[in-house]
Image 1: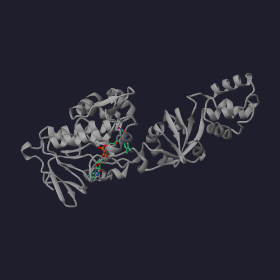
Image 2: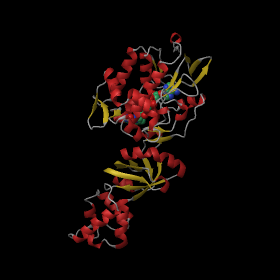
Image 3: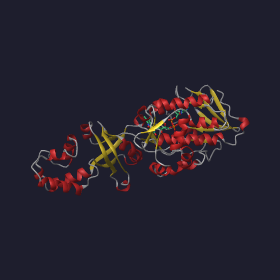
Image 4: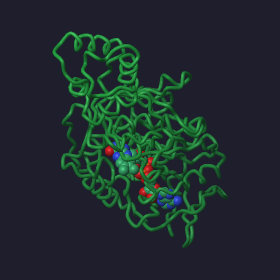
Amino acid sequence: MVAGIRAARLGRTVAVVERSPSPGRKLLASGGQRCNLSNTLGADQFMERVGKDGRFMGPALEGLGGPKLREFFHGIGVQTVVHDGFRVWPETRKSSTVLAGLIGELERLKVPIITACEVLETAFVDGHFTATHAGGAFHSTELIIATGGLALPKSGASGGGYRFAEGFGHKITARHPAGVPVVTAEDWTARCTAHTIGKAHLQVAIKKHAKIARTGDLIFTKTGLRGPVVLDISRELSPLLDRYGEVPLWLNLCRGKGQEDWQGIFKEWRAGPQRALGDALGEHLPGELVDVMCELSGTSPSIAVQQLKGEPRDALARTLARTPITVIGHTGYDGAFITRGGARLKDVRPETLESKLQPGLYLCGEVLDLDGPCGGFNLQWAFASGYLAGTGAGMAAGDAAATPSAAR
Ligand SMILES: Cc1cc2nc3c(=O)[nH]c(=O)nc-3n(C[C@H](O)[C@H](O)[C@H](O)COP(=O)(O)OP(=O)(O)OC[C@H]3O[C@@H](n4cnc5c(N)ncnc54)[C@H](O)[C@@H]3O)c2cc1C
């Protein structure tokens, strides 16, 4: 939709084609229907947080990075707010406001949104793109693939765009659900579902991948782990799951306290008044987790703190500092926010998002092999890349007199 707005503002004849009965269904679902549409990071920090391919976003963020994106939305009647110094939301706290703004602008620009129309095939024949659907075909001088990823299939995600890109010679990298809750081998998580652990630290316990670590809010589920920190680290875990079948993790649920910190705390407890280990640990962890930690380290919460000695004491310090847990799966695309993987970046020019393989073809948003963590990164990328692709297509050499025909 943003690509369509931009190309239309540049004077081109545009049609937005959508397979669902209405556009922007994923946008509506985003941010718990409140749409965390961007964040306040500067471009450099933004790209750093995205990871190794973040720099590809540079030209798109230059054109419609955080402040400019907010101006763009204000320009179409969507006021935005930041309450925590980081996340950008619509002032109404409703994603429907963002969608209404985009649809309103497309209407103002007389861009048709052709809904319930799934593009089945795309091709470039005799100097024109053809996008075939059940009732016929569209023909145009430029084509923008903005079909998103595979997450949340009920929003319309189909993966068709990967096939279209492949048809033009683009390589598609392996795809995985990301931003997704994980399933663990251990079932003790089911006993702890009432609790959110702030500043939990998760680290991959495979030497080669030990750099993969995240800190944030963690929630236990009946089958594993969820919460912002899990959604973030799952971007890295999904590919490892494919590779190794299971991924061992270490959890630190006590704000980074290491084994030595715990040994110091135990010493203080021993010198203090007599009380049960469970009561003392209860100052650091919810009761259910106290029981779990004691079980995992082979001790009992009912012993007196003075009785905590030798190997059981060391085992408890180890377990508290690095609680072992094994990820054996995830909840799949139905429960995922994003797709990791997609159309290979090497085949696309970052400064315009035009294909290097097929002039006049543009790719933007999640269909590309780029994804970010939680916190407005993915929508910011979708909007900024859409704007850049719309700029490229809008200003393309395609003879202005021979503007694309969007006839059905
Ligand atoms: C539940 C949920 C919450 C999220 N919350 C946030 C958030 O708060 N902040 C954030 O930054 N990101 C969030 N994300 C991620 C973000 O929504 C996506 O990264 C973003 O929507 C991707 O934009 P896109 O335009 O590339 O793809 P999409 O938004 O998926 O749009 C692609 C469109 O193409 C259509 N389409 C696909 N194939 C065809 C075809 N063959 N023919 C015609 N139409 C087709 C689809 O129906 C769809 O409407 C969330 C994702 C989910 C699932």
